[in-house]
Image (tube, rainbow, N blue to C red; front, side):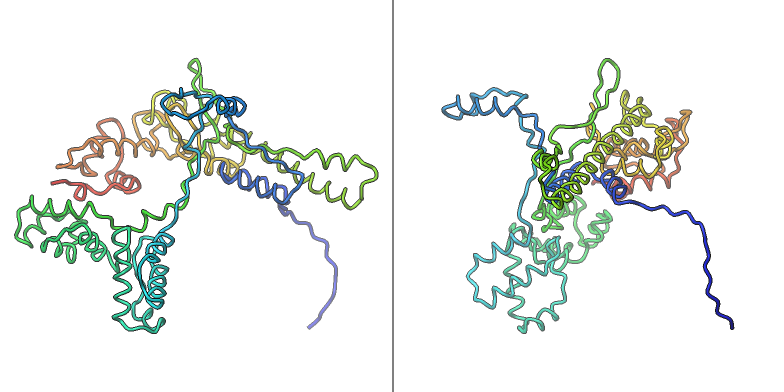
Length: 448
């Protein structure tokens, strides 16, 4: 076997992604709230960056108004849209289920050991408020007996929201019924053994099993439907952040105008103090190098932010142009459109369009729409352009909304109704879209 050392010269092509390019793509992919967080993060790392929050409020007039007012009476204040603060854009915070339950149990008069066990059980609950852990493992780990465990779990089950600490759905509903003072032997039997029959709308089967009239069965089940199967979720709204549009569409003289939403946004500026240091010949060289590095970083961020805004605006303008009939006449006229189509028209790569529409919203005269809403596949219709799957879903949703609840429309019936309107869609496609909309089948929608 021969081993030889030699040098070879080869050529190859490689795509090298620079840090600047990575940042540009990342920023384009972010939504409006993520952009604000990124700007604040960059400002915290870069002393050259100053952030200003733009606002539509005339603070000078606002302060003058306060100074003139000796007392506050809401009935005497006239509404002024120029000084209006949009409360819907504010962030709401509330404690989660664990903090809530820890506070409640702290008010109970329990000994130290019982309090420790109760807190351990609370921390073991899932987000729906259920205790789904293995009881024997908890008992062994805490070195306690079964009676003490049951006592502590019962304490948790007395807390609010009603139903927390249950080990299964039946127990959750029973706890709520007891707390509401609902005591009915048949109802308790149904909750214990026949929740699956309720889920499948098998009312007649339940009536026959318990030898009761159908109307009585409906009345009992209507009580069950008022209970909360996931009590923990009512406490888990930790943060509610309202969507802000990236672009706004207005109709002016029968023409749709699209522009960037600059209100309530972060504006980036370069701190002039550091510019003066660069101009000063006596400044330390290492300090100058540091400032130059941070200045390049700040300039790159501003450039990427401008590029993002321009790209999103171009995409939005092309969407409005391509879907003009939708903006004039409504959902029924939404045309099939792919990201590839917009990419070709704007001479962008398809991945750029994908990043440009991700998490972006458009405020129109008809409400707020996500960019992705306008992209859908095509189905056959008498229209030369076909009809979008989004439009089909809206038609299905409207027909189910207007149906007779005692005789709900089957998927086959909806498909026939759509065919009569010139839209050829198979029954299985109707079923698929109905499921994507989160709508139950006709048998489960039936009301008695």
